[in-house]
Amino acid sequence: MAENTQEVPQVAINDIGSKEDFIKAVDSTIKNFDDGDLVQGTVVKIDHDEVLLDIGYKTEGVIPARELSIKKDVNPDEVVQVGDEIEALVVTKEDKEGRLILSKKRAQYERAWGDIEKIKESDGIVEGTVIEAVKGGLIVDIGLRGFLPASLVEMRRVRDLSPYIGQKIQAKILELDKNRNNVVISRRQYLEETQSEVRETFMAQLKKGQIREGTISSIVNFGAFVDLGGVDGLIHVSELSWKHIDHPSEVVKVGQKVTVEVLDVDNDRERISLSLKATQEDPWQRFARTHVPGQVVKGKVTKIVQFGVFVSVEDGIEGLVHISELANRHVENPETVVKQGDEIFVKVIDVDLDRRRISLSLKQADESVDPASEDFDPAIYGMPAEYDEEGNYKYPEGFDPETNEWIAGYEQQREEWESQYAAAHDLWEQHKAFVAKEMENAEASAAEDAKNAESESSEQSTAKEDQQASTDNATNTFASEAAPEGTLASDDQLAALREQLLKEKQ
Image (cartoon, rainbow, N blue to C red; front, side):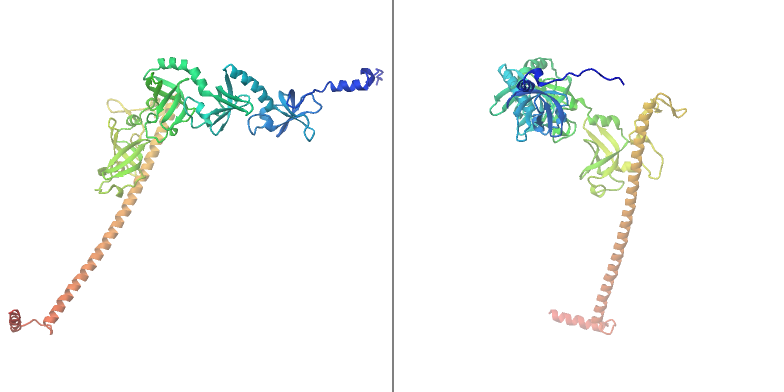
């Protein structure tokens, strides 16, 4: 191996002057700062409870996790990454352990105060993310913790503030107090200022009967407000659903996309009335469209009255089973046949859409099915069936009746048809099981009635025999008293007795 003869230069203190000069040169590479100063640095290490920041000092600065963000209980990894250039405020140059303590949160706070003061002076707008819901309002990250009172979130009072967490909002600054660390902002004021022109234009274009897309912005006891694109309209609770509801939250939630119909536009009062149910099919019309007389449906007994029972056949739709249609025997009290809450099968007799009435029959439904039979008609159990003018069944599109097979390319139609058939078949099986159970109960009841009748007959026979024996005893007693020797009285005896009675009477 060749020997390396290159000389290595020797560095000595004298090359840059005296020892004092050398110390000054080293000190000149170290930044000088005081408590409260803002410094720039590079993230070199992240732990679960602190972050190390290289700011060019003799040691790295420490940022405790609580000093990373105005948000509470944050994970340092969610705030910074190794290599990030960030600004921090010097809390103390040297704590009792000799560490340099820094704060990213306070640096952000100091920087933000200057910016926000300028915005306030210019009557500008701040933008930030809602980070927390507190008593009375929201906390918004605008570089520092801005307080947004609940009464100033929307154009009206908002009760549930939780949906706003995570949303980015814009607001006006109402109050600044650095000494008290107090910043109050108003989104309502921002909305009022920015929406007045937009609202006038929008209201002029809005017409009764229009269908509009919107988002549920807030929910109150009497209805729900819908943001139609910068302008809110009200869906009254009566226009939320075709069925009765106790509270709007049963139907909609904040942030939900909805399609509504404009019912009325009051330009003078700037009020918009909307309807959600008007854009949805009336369940009564749907029932009338999908059910015809003769079909069997499953329902639940909701109310029992003297003249029959009411049965819920769909959500929000009830039909009446008249007392004469409960059983194939005379019924005095409907409760002897069904109980409230019972699930039963009924046949649709008539649908009166105008009067919103449905006539049902439990008796005819039971008579229409034989539990032991395999004769199944899917049309009776709700499967759509079409017939031509001559009354012939119209097979579904894509089905070849000659081969009894589906044609290639009609897989979707086949899947839909088979699903409808399976649903109807399942309902038929349930109905057969229901009727079989009813027959068992009827037989058991009849046997019990026969047993009770036989027992009653036996008791009546015994009572009759006891009564007869009592009568015989009375007769025998009378005979014994009248004729001690067991013989009939003679004519002379009867004459003497009559004479004695006449004397007593006188």
